[in-house]
Length: 91
Image (cartoon, rainbow, N blue to C red; front, side):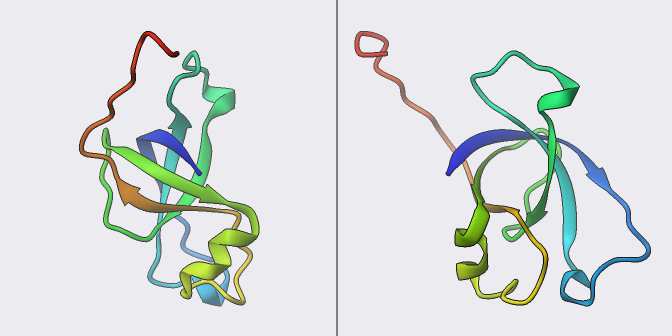
């Protein structure tokens, strides 16, 4: 799981049946230099919006969310981050 920021959305009029009704968002990982090539597309499970910081899970753990058991999903937004605290002395 990692933290990312929502930077856009994707409109797909044709997609896999398992993705019907799902919102697709463009996310960029936090704590990396911003680069469009680092951005990815994730399925939104929590109602995130543009500019929000989110928790993203990837790989086979996405299918454990329940909604995507038979869908070709690799990244899913599973949480909206309210606050992040980092101890600068240990970082």
